[in-house]
Length: 133
Image 1 (cartoon, helix red, strand yellow):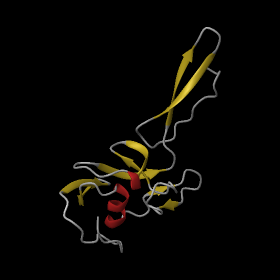
Image 2: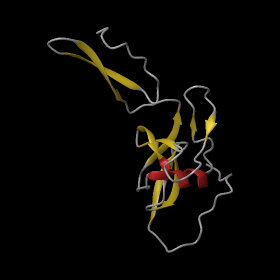
Image 3: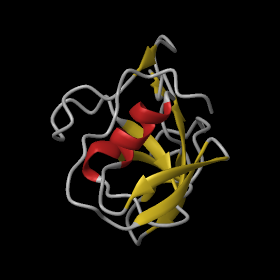
């Protein structure tokens, strides 16, 4: 991935280097720096798309407030990249739209319902309305 970004890491105390994979390409990073900063420095823009319009977004506030830094990290969608330190071998991918929700049908003595829980992929899975089990 060519570095088309204006972001460069400032020279600070040395930290151990790690290798992460951004969209499958090996990128060198420093242990403990945020996934969002590595993504910006590597030039992966946009780093996510919105679930409504599909418009591209990128990390913005870098302090966990705006949620523009959502990434798929190690197969888990909707991870705040700015709050996630990189580790050796981490796999980082674009967050495309909303993460999927899988439903599990449960039945109790008095009612039927479905509970939703996140999945590891980024495809949207349409669920049924609770009670239509």
